[in-house]
Length: 266
Ligand SMILES: NC(=O)c1ccc[n+]([C@@H]2O[C@H](COP(=O)([O-])OP(=O)(O)OC[C@H]3O[C@@H](n4cnc5c(N)ncnc54)[C@H](OP(=O)(O)O)[C@@H]3O)[C@@H](O)[C@H]2O)c1
Image 1 (cartoon, rainbow, N blue to C red):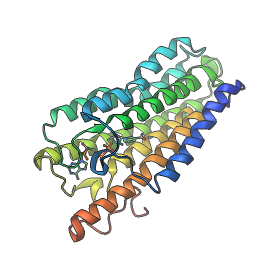
Image 2 (cartoon, rainbow, N blue to C red):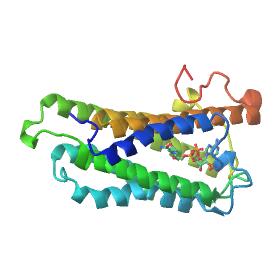
Image 3 (cartoon, rainbow, N blue to C red):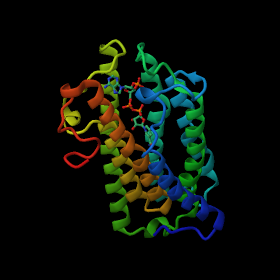
């Protein structure tokens, strides 16, 4: 149904998402992104985390909404159904998540702020990715006329969206639990307990990875698959770094059987 556009520039942009995923996973084998518990000097001035998350994630909202009216599928029900959960995720990430960070009055001593340089890189990536995702769904994908969309295409979009929403529920609940833990611990780090935390170190990352797998299934575009791979390339190594960090900090108090991001496996 959806295919690589024959517009060479757009196809190159989609391909570069795959190249970025590869580059990201390779670099994260040697480096950790320097924010949160992995923050370290040498990355320039910092800004409050709430401002950083608002700034870096916002392009996925405003650029998607700016591009949608210019797509040839701007009012196609399939394109709108696919884009809706994408926008829902970024509505939460851009507006609600920073508000929650803002409400969290305490900070860990190790992560007093978010490096502006890292936020700027993430902002650039999000401009690029929002463009690629929004245009692939709203303009470049091939859809049958609305009345002729086969039932199985609707079924695939519904199943992918259900997976995305489940992943989002796990992601949001886990982030809320971590922020509560941080607040209750007066800004210090504690070992999270209960629910998915008993199986994996980073259920918030697991939920996020599941979200974009669902999105890839719903959208069925090379761009969506590329973003899903990029997310895994980013979050799987970071979850392993988090787990290593917990083991070093808490020693035998950290459950040895708890995996990084995939229950029972990794
Ligand atoms: N799509 C992507 O590629 C991508 C990339 C990165 C992040 N994200 C998403 O963005 C959200 C935030 O990511 P993140 O990397 O900041 O997640 P994180 O490292 O799990 O931290 C989330 C928040 O909880 C606090 N926290 C975490 N563990 C804690 C503990 N054991 N005790 C006390 N407080 C704790 C952190 O404080 P500190 O900041 O002080 O550590 C931070 O405020 C997640 O939902 C993630 O899935 C998505």
